[in-house]
Length: 370
Image (cartoon, rainbow, N blue to C red; front, side, top):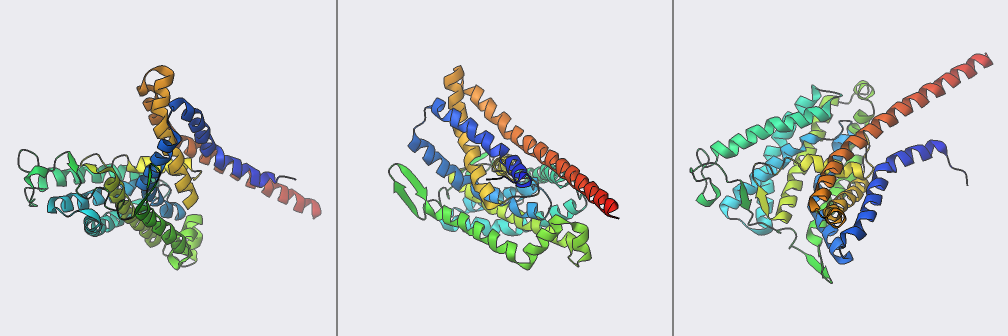
């Protein structure tokens, strides 16, 4: 059997990060001394908790805008919805649906603003979206610290700081496990929240369907070449804004799903790491800043969080200190983003060199024939 070098090269390049994480995890699993049942249960929990957030990143990548680190705007919108329904005392799945209903217009507004800003920063969308997230975080904190309880009335004094206004740093959510408990089955000691998996399945179906729509095809065209798309009559800037709006709204729902699984809300810092960990998980699955798929998101989430589970305990048994494993997994989580971006940049450079070399050969062939 002969291998096509042109196909083998990109395949190997795209598999470097997933293979690296798989090897690290396979080495760490026996060292951690966790049982198989425990690891399976934890992976299912992490998939339920994080997959929706990771899947929210796919559309902006398809539209050529890279990884939307501004997805934390949607995460903050979701947290505002959860804070209000907690104050109102609405529990279970109805409370989560009402939180999503409250948060959706906020997420749409923030997504639209984010899209406008990113249209002014073409080619620098990722770093701009990261800075945008920090800017909106300041407004979000001002809203919760000074407006809630003073201008915006709260029914529950227990949610406010001792001064009488401003939301407390941490809240217990009455809607904890609201989606997880809708439909749950147990296989031995492993609980499988079918209800939440069905919601994750819906976003997968939505993503597949959306790519086939007119807007989805426009986004793909814009992602391939903005100049050609503009010439073809596609409203490039409007399409880019729409991709960010949809991503922000999905991130809002993803944060609600994440927090209902956790059961507690870190009011002011809960959304800070959402974009970084979701981006890292997507890149671990073999995605790049220009191409990502649903399997990349699901596989990446499983691999990334498997390492998160086993590394601290493996570090403890090797060195006697769990902190070594904790430092290592944090180093990996930040480093994988850098590694994936470096590999992507290197691959693009190699592709350009191959195209240039192929063009030169074609020109030499034409000149020799003439």
